[in-house]
Image (cartoon, rainbow over all chains, first blue to last red; front, side, top):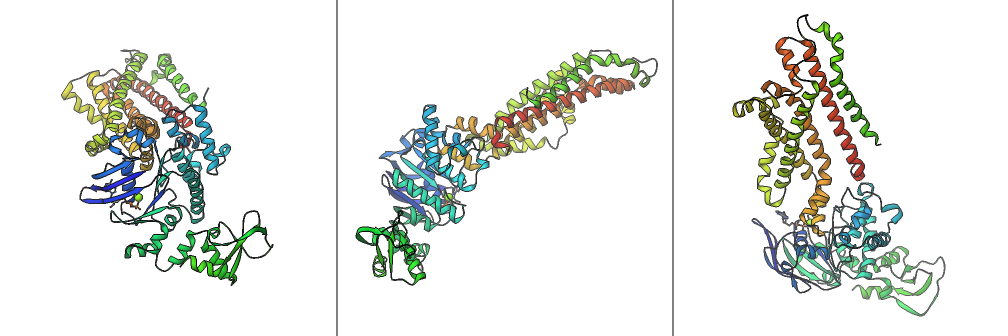
Length: 315
Length: 247
Ligand SMILES: Nc1ncnc2c1ncn2[C@@H]1O[C@H](COP(=O)(O)OP(=O)(O)OP(=O)(O)O)[C@@H](O)[C@H]1O
Ligand SMILES: [Mg+2]
């Protein structure tokens, strides 16, 4: 658990972070979102003490971070940043192995861990372990950056726009990866982005920041339904809030389930159970249908999604 | 045997052969001087001059490297940042003041001989190394440093495992420049009484003996080429050890 209480950070005259209070529960993903220069990175850097805070209290698992040994504090926090910060003179494997090595793991254990992580992030170990960062694409480098942050199985993950500067498709793939990993590992995560869609997708709770302050700290659903101020409302975009809300829920959560899965009718228009309501809505619009069968990966029809139901859920 | 060491080894061979074999060329050099003058520089053997020249350059380069590297590292640490602008200005002086001027200034302060030459060489040689140390360290992607620190490396680990390996090639290039300049400057040191391969050149110029000048110049040239190709080989070796930086 990470608790910030009335935390401020000043750079000379500039107050980059202004008396913010924020609690990130164990296992929760908190996304800091806001426009450029609002103090997101500064907030993150105060948590691992890359920047000392000027005022207030920061506690990790109940302990004041100023009282914890600096190296120890950081070794327990995975850190991934935009631009990755991979070491160009080290191979991918050695980059990922950094924190385990600093913690003095045995060689065999480190190697096994590197292989496991490369697999987890969809990079074949045989192909990528011995490459150098310069030989990777942007998306691959970001994956390695995330793998490096996860390497020593830290309790806490700090991620500062780890998927920034990527094309939309690669970005979405990495977000899916992140969701999948997060469902499995449940790390206490603070994730920084200025992309509200990324925030809505990844967050258990979102903290909207502006000019060093937190304007609203709430679930994606609540941020969309009850924006606390005009700024938050404009950030989520008042026009397509409905679609964003629909994007938060999967079809499986809303459909009417058949008592028994049945064989799906081939060729018939359908949606996947894991698709979002937004995708289902789009299919209904496009195909002019008021009802869609819901199928799973094996081609079994699990239920149906009706337009009435969808309407009610996104109201 | 790594191939990049072959070139410096060959040049070294030529240099040593030159030092030992020049006297044998007396009959060919005879036409360059009028009958009453000696043909081969007689005062010291070329080997003695070469060794003394090398020693001057090596010791001053070692001192310059130590001080410049230490200083460059110090002013890029958080506690030394206040001195960074001063160090940068100092480093850029090296590009405006010619090395001869440093020698000329050394005389009134310290007199004649090996000592003042050594000090002048060390001081002047410091500048290119300092400049490249600063450039190398400041040229590192800030994200790399942030990641290294943020993931729990101590400041000495960041320096030794990340910053110096990444800046090493640029620093090495600075040392190379420094040594190359100082091989030439040390030769001019003969004018203020240092014993170097510049001796025959100066003596030749003073007495109008072209053969002396030629012998000194050839050996200085060979020495410069040998040392430069040695650095070239070192750089190749460096690249081989850190392949990530070459591609
Ligand atoms: N080291 C520093 N020295 C002085 N001012 C700083 C420093 N770091 C940040 N600031 C200032 O603090 C404010 C917040 O910066 P911060 O990096 O936290 O913004 P951000 O929300 O991460 O923005 P972005 O989305 O562009 O990364 C900015 O006004 C910035 O200029
Ligand atoms: Mg930032």
